[in-house]
Image (cartoon, rainbow, N blue to C red; front, top):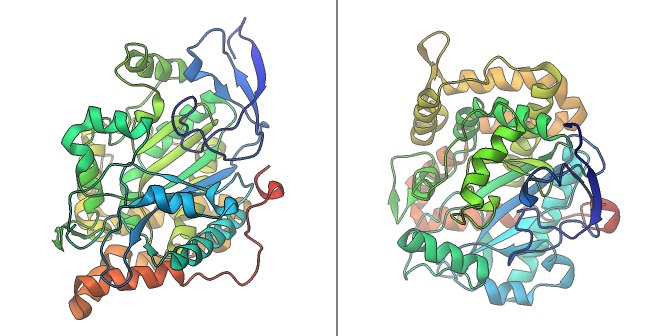
Length: 425
């Protein structure tokens, strides 16, 4: 911390998405204590939440589509669905840009197993409560079939801003992602993690690709979500930052001028959440099964630990290489051949993922080796590959049916993952 900068302690309720002071101020953890650093020397939005000073805490967001279970069509009724949820579930659910999508989010966990157990409970409870409304849920990077009506934007101040600024882009077909937050109590460490994760973004995208179909046809991409969503501004990988003040200066040029209302309108593949004290990884498609989500959730804190405990020599990867690798990973998934900037040759994405996972293994015990070992299933066939195989025999309606079954199949057998004050404090 720079000399002369003070610490301010306060208590607030904050949303895992970080929209503090706007429309989406929802519960992540009851009365989470916030220790804000450097508030007198930086803009208010940049005051870093040091939390309880714990590294590698985990929070997860899964975006879920709402479906008519008989017609397998999208149901654009997120506001009424949210209003009809039980109080226990509603505190862990929120609207998204599109009215056919709901976001489920966990509390704060000290390990991967706790976060995965809560996601399991949230999925099962959501499927049960939707069933009572004669609706169903599914998760994938895109809705495979063609939308039968124009996409509707959710109501609310935030989404009015999105609609007004994005115009027709906000009314495109919905895309869904898996977001993983890792707690890093020091902003300079958070910058190290942000920089280090840049090189890992294309392999993560290749591994998580789960959206081959869009508008009722094969897109030719493993992650159509990536190419659709990049129609929004402020997407893709962030640049390398020399320090936190470098980050603040760059972002505040957008916020102080009023071009952006707050930093949550940065939709980068990985971004900082100062209000939460987290690094948020956003590059991954939403996953259809709990097992696939668990594998990816385990990989993110392992990568953060790898960066902070071991350091990385790949921080300064050229933006041109990173952008090309991102495109190749979105197009070809695990069959992609990605640029190795050191060897100056193309290498299989599976090789890069293997090397990444191997480097993470010594850190996986601290966050959940069992969950990390589930990556083998994704390496064998990721979600995009499985969807294409299923479509050959069952068509796209069969794919949507399969996705709903995958979502609801993680039925809870106990209340171990049930959200509670003890779980999220």
